[in-house]
Length: 125
Image (tube, rainbow, N blue to C red):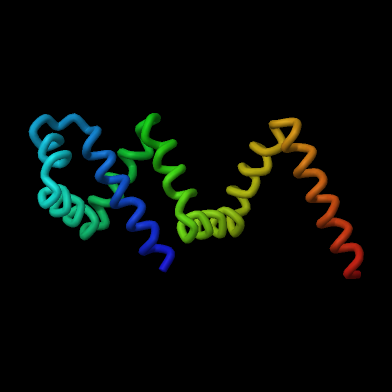
């Protein structure tokens, strides 16, 4: 279920990426011909190697990576899946915490949350 949601999100992003790739006639066809666009996106989505290559292109483009992340975070299922994956990866949690404590307001919030966790754990003992 989560992968289906992510697949839908990335299909939309593929269209966004293809439209901005500047391939001349191909880009024009993708923008103006719904049937052609569906065929191209369907072909890319059907081939994991092509889908991964498109995803890498989208993520490598500074102006598109923000849109990719925002689109994933706006989708409830996709954002929950991403957050679960981060929460179960120690390196990812470290990155999130380092980023959060870099901001003084967020650092106070993180410390307050951690104190609450510590009190809850101590209370359970």
